[in-house]
Image 1 (tube, rainbow, N blue to C red):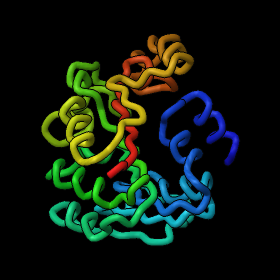
Image 2 (image 1 turned 180 degrees about the vertical axis):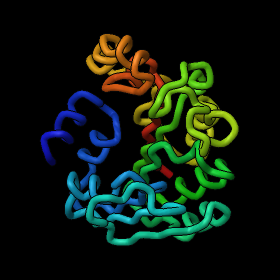
Image 3 (image 1 turned 90 degrees about the horizontal axis):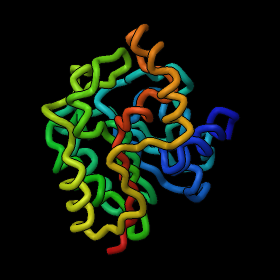
Image 4 (image 1 turned 120 degrees about the horizontal axis):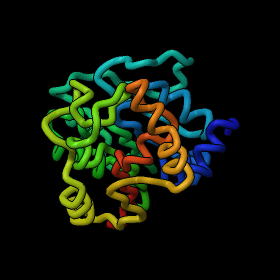
Amino acid sequence: MNYKDTLKKHFRKNGKTDFLSKLNSNSSILDVGCGNNSPFCTKQILPDCIYTGLDVGDYNQTKPLLADNYVITTPQNFSKEIAKFSKAFDAVISSHNLEHCDDREMTLTAMLEALKIGGKLYLSFPCEQSVNFPQRGGTLNYYDDSTHKLSPPNFNETLSYIKRKGFEIVYAERNYSPKILSLVGRACEPLSKLRNKNMTGTWEYYGFESIIIAEKIR
């Protein structure tokens, strides 16, 4: 794990990097919506993992593509492609993907079914309140991103659905706001507003992100 990932692990407890760092080194991982160099970044943390990435296009893959399996599909077939991997993975990651999906329930169902018993889900998405947040470069208001569908996922409904599907909730936070980064965001807020773009801690200051971590128990 490099220096940047180490900082993320310590300052963003229960964030994606922290989640990955707690998995077994040889875990099989499905990354749903794997843009922004996610294959490379995941392999930096877990070089021996068996990584499968799935997306509807090559989004910002500027680093070496280290995925063991890399699947490109269409938005219409997205959930169907995930459904091919029944009970296949130790971990499923969906980091800010659900809000882009045409059929959220089918996509979430397929992700849950892709996990082995004892497997873990990491799910993050914009909070419901983000529809009222200020507009900001880098996305702070939900509608800043034109590829976001409809409204944000409903946190309580999503949580309840995951539980009904045989999962135990390990961590759930409607407005993820780790203290130190929230304070940094508060200090940077005047400059962030002036420049009209997100800065370090902006998301944490506003509690933009909802995070759910769950383990499959049946």
